[in-house]
Length: 209
Ligand code: GRF
Image 1 (cartoon, rainbow, N blue to C red):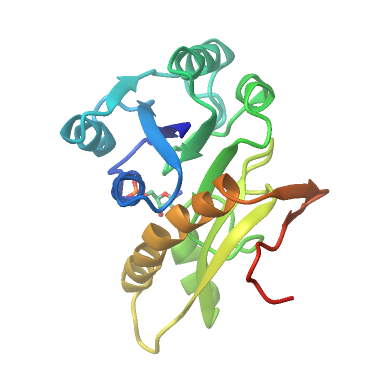
Image 2: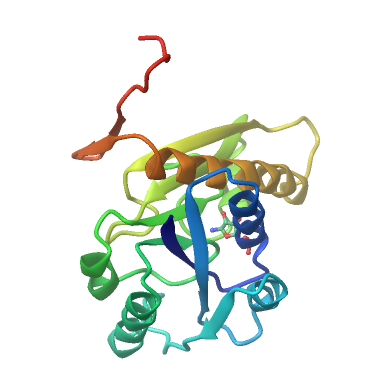
């Protein structure tokens, strides 16, 4: 079983969906650690409720990045728990070199838009205000940029006539809760390789060409 850490700053609904999917055997991994930069994150309560070790590692704000000293503590905590993959689930910090070098191509993020459109904060509202007819969510590997890494999976959500940005965000969130476990299943089972920005999944037996 692959040992997984989740990093979350907020309410933790994606974290909870990942825990539920893990327990249902959707992907061959075990979530062993929840790290948060926010002492009052809802995700910490969810971790406690599921007997998952939850820890807070606070970090000074540096243009959205983790400060280097704190980032070393994140690396240490993950290594100490034997973590192999990291899932960012509403973690409001840009990941830097210490984590990227320690877990190259083993850090995943979920973003509530169809990237590369609408990276950054409040993506659902950005898309709604722009007037797009289709938005959705993206699960991607994390690189040094903000929401720029190679894409594992995307799920489209049509914008409904007359709905508010909040209603759109709720419908996207419901899809996030399915897309994140499925993306993990894809990278943790079967073979894949990176070719520049592209991730190529090898077809498994039984899949048509
Ligand atoms: C989600 O919309 C996720 O896509 C984004 O941050 C939000 C986190 O929500 N990165 P939650 O804490 O998982 O409920």
